[in-house]
Image (cartoon, rainbow, N blue to C red; front, side, top):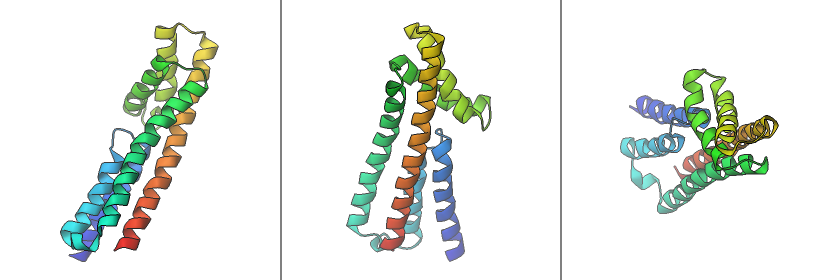
Length: 159
């Protein structure tokens, strides 16, 4: 039974890390799922109240970091809300249209298209915003990855 329990917990954690680069997968939900699976297989008593408090604060941090990284990436490179929305849409659609490369190409093209259609910016400025959206996405992936590793370390220390 232990092998099954830990296989499920580790699989949920692995899916959470896949969700870093495939934003359609809600990574934080799978991470929390791993904690809940542990509680169901073993005991929630093994996970003290401070563990849950810290993990919930990290969940909030993950959502905020994701949003802020995208905003900063687009805004720092002169983008508008149209570029930010285009980047977000491209990030969600890109991996389905172009597997693997769509993770980078999607937000890049989405930001460019958003800027060109809505804001009527020059192609050079739109490309600059596209680069900013990719930098924002990559920064978000690294930041969220670090936070998720910290969350798992806290989990391991707690049990």
